[in-house]
Structure formats: C-alpha cells, structure tokens
Length: 175
Image 1: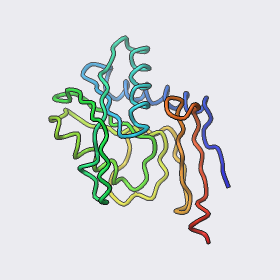
Image 2 (image 1 turned 90 degrees about the horizontal axis):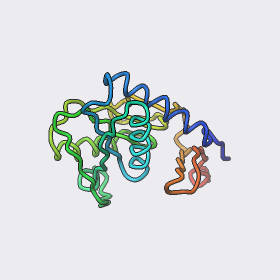
Image 3 (image 1 turned 30 degrees about the vertical axis):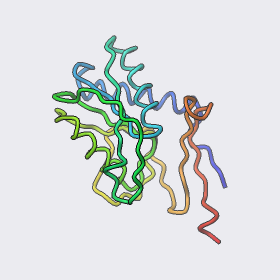
C-alpha cells in the first residue's frame, strides 16, 4: 500500500511556510545558518536558504554535518562535511523525516564540534512520530502519524528527479 502525502506543490508550500516561520522566529536572516543532515537535509537546507534570500535579500550560509562518527547504532556512514561558521549564529538543522530522534541527536553532537551556536532549531519536512529521545522539531512541513510497519520516503528533485512524500507499508514485516 502506497499513499502520496505531499506532491510537488505541497512540498513547495511547506518549504515556503517554514522559511517564513524561521524568519519570524529569528527576527530576520541576520546571523542565520542552515545545516543539512545527510542525505536529503542538505537540498532542503539549500532550498530554505534560497527562499530566505528571496524574502529577506540575505544569503544565509549552508553546510552539512557528518553524523557518521556520532551515530549510536554502529552504522558509521561517512559523508562529506560542508562546514559553515556556526559560532554565535542561529543554526537551523534541516532533515527530511524525523522518526526516533537518534539521527538528530547525532547531528547535534557533530554540529557542536564546529563551534558554539547561539541557538539551534530543527526543521523537518515530515514528522512521523515514534520518538525514542526527547527531541521535537521547531518547524514541521507535515505531521504524518504512521504505524511502525510503515516507511516515509521523501523524494526531492535534486536527488530523485521529482518532489513528493510517500508512505509505504513494509510488507516484509507483516509476513
């Protein structure tokens, strides 16, 4: 069973709304930095940065954290780390889906190795619930309550050729 949760227009509207929410919360784009969590967090961070520049006329820096060394599940994925100066900046950490919160915890650990931000907020395109850690996003594109045997897939033009969010039931777990 597959169900489309957001189409391309839904993704665009969610990002537009979240860009405005960030600017409202931060009082503008001064001292703002956007940091993506691999792999789809980086294109989301870049899109939000473009929207912020369009709205405010200020191009916030964009980076990506390498969460591999900070994971608690033994999966030591290593990705290129694109650093930005976070010292005394308001950082918005960007990811496609939040589930247990463990990836965000690893990203926070990685981020503080760069310096001490003034503040850190979390932006996710989809919050699917089932948190295992006390982590809650500040900016959410769509809340999608899911069953544990469902998976949420975010597809972005930069990586997949189209924008959509799809929920799929994991039939392997049901057999």
